[in-house]
Length: 473
Image (cartoon, rainbow, N blue to C red):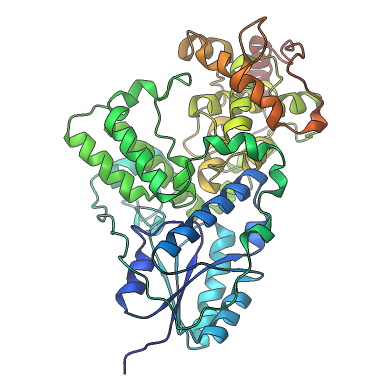
């Protein structure tokens, strides 16, 4: 006889209904579906901004499910314990979910799958957060890729599955289990007053993500090659926010990029390469999990980085008061919008790790607390790339000069004036909103005098190069 027991559909960082292989497979069985989202220890460990943004996404997903005649069940606690309890309450015979790839999630999911199978419960995980499963991309020697360009060449002609349509309906169970409430979780508590400042910049949910992709392909992708490096121009897709939570899939973005390339839009190829850069970060995280916690190049353990976050220059960096305009503008953009332009991220990271000689972990963990588009693999690889300790990294002796970089990429100073204001003028707009977003404990006011550099560009570069040349490895 056909199994008619319900299926628990465990949502995680896949907050959408379209192009969702686990949901599609569950619907195809004809069985009732109980969508579930769990607040476990991994969620509680998230930084302030990612946790708050996740909460918004979960609420949006709940509304989308209601439109399909379904609902989202919320439970908190150990994942295996909560799933087991829900199986007992609903009589579910299966649990489906989309895969995660960071080591902590893998450990959790492996335990869940093994235990459920031992109990006679079907447990299935599905691909979808990535286009290419990390273990399926190998060098000719059978190992994993450590350099981006060969990785790109290996996958650029691979077939990527066409995105799946959202189901027309989701069969509800005869009786719903009890659910906790999202408001009671208070996932935005650590954001404090910053939530009201950042919220207008959030593009929330699956529909907004699709609209963002469509607008980018229609009017921006053609100029993406050049515009993506100009922080004062609206020239990027900004899809990292939605990709990080699975409100849109890389497959959906990939096929849109392919269509744009076929239409002759010159920036489409670069957009496709950026999607593969994200894949490369996950490829490396899967094969070398130390990317998240330690210097990927192990000989860099001997490098004399400062690891004391109490130092005055670290505090100045976090507060966007280094006296270096490009650096401070980038950090202030992050506090107001929850994101930071990629060119600014490189400058901000280079200044901390090279001019200030501070460990990349300090910056990585600060971004982990402040970014609404935080992604474990991309964040870690980006910081190690900038620091010189990571795979395929910029050489340590390549020290970005934040002053000449500003002259090159923000010639008219549109970016720094948006976030720092015009010299001598009263702060307005986004430059003023920064002071509404930051902690009151910083004791900063809009009329504070803009500081002199804590370390100027030439001095910092000289110090960094001396440390590199005198290294013990």
